[in-house]
Image (cartoon, rainbow over all chains, first blue to last red; front, side, top):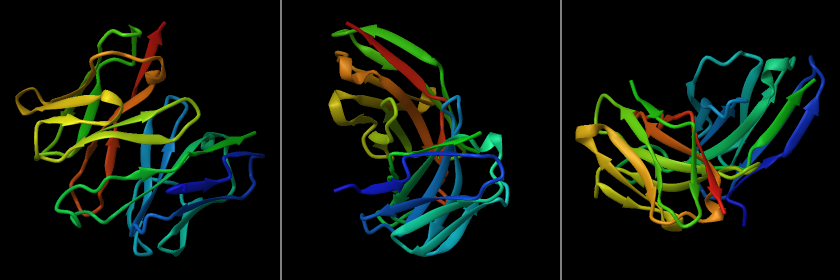
Amino acid sequence: DTAVSQTPKYLVTQMGNDKSIKCEQNLGHDTMYWYKQDSKKFLKIMFSYNNKELIINETVPNRFSPKSPDKAHLNLHINSLELGDSAVYFCASSQPMGLAGGQETQYFGPGTRLLVL
Amino acid sequence: AQSVTQLDSHVSVSEGTPVLLRCNYSSSYSPSLFWYVQHPNKGLQLLLKYTSAATLVKGINGFEAEFKKSETSFHLTKPSAHMSDAAEYFCVVSDLTGANNLFFGTGTRLTVIP
């Protein structure tokens, strides 16, 4: 039983293309996130969604757009892919902040390795 | 603002010897702190977390970390390294706002020598 799953695992595409990465969680969490891990392994938050509402949006180009059809899914759409978008993208989920009186643990998916040629 | 600094980008130990991965944090208030592990080509797995309860936190696979407010540190330790511990380890601090935002350190790569 995979808690947080992502598809595809690997994605190789040409510059300028539009692509999507899917994320699903079966933990019953209300909040989902997308992180980007660069070639130096540094992880940075991109988006989070709580009950289908965007609650944070870091300085991410508007070519990236999260789409949440329901609270179990948060897909990441990327338009006009650029070389610099090559990275590993991680999806995560958690309960909302404060539900258990403190910081809620985030559970991560296996990652999607995107290579833009 | 919250941030973490992982003092070593790479740590190498012999199998069976102790592991120490260092982390210092910066936070405007009492933070929540985590250690995550990433094995090669795998996702991130939570090792342990500190949320203002006991300062010595025990995690999975024999790892533990001690929160020291006076030193603003949250170092990760294990008494005896195993080959399967070889991985990238991330120290993480939360922002404790409604966004539940996590700030990751730059990671420490642990190598275990047979």
